[in-house]
Image (tube, rainbow, N blue to C red; front, side):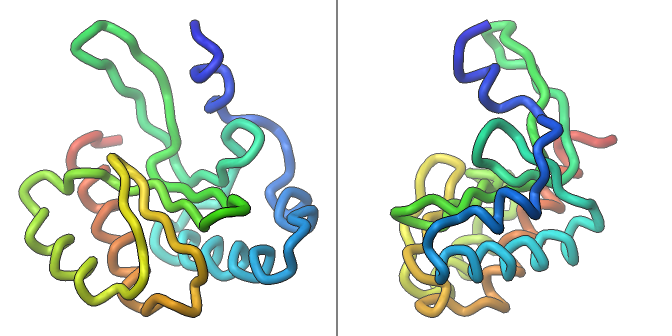
Amino acid sequence: MGKAGIKTRATQAGVADFIAAIPDARRREEAVLVDAMHRRVTGFEPRMWGPSIIGYGSYDYVYDSGHSGTMCRAGFSPRKAAMTLYLMGHYLDRQPEADALLAKLGKHRTGKSCLYVSKLAEVDLDVLEQLVALSWDVMNARYPA
């Protein structure tokens, strides 16, 4: 297994300790807010996935290539450059709903399965929570427990 697979495995590291050790006070406060949001949406206690991803729940996947693994169903990483939220990248048949929410979110960037927010103060937190909930619903539909 490659290095990336090893880095994204669930660990026994403490989430509270990880958040408390974030050097930037604003990012640390934002991590507390995003953690609370994920706990509300998912109903799960978080676990650390690799050195910097705070994840909720898990799912098993198998790619067409045959590569398989386990990853968190929802999660985020309070990175220096941006708060990175891991969301279902294409929302399956609910993409129009996701697009409408993203249009109302505020200042952000997106990647394949990531939402990047430089400052939480620049986005609508209610809309952000709706995006997390939508992604959670889609993940649960695609990967039933």
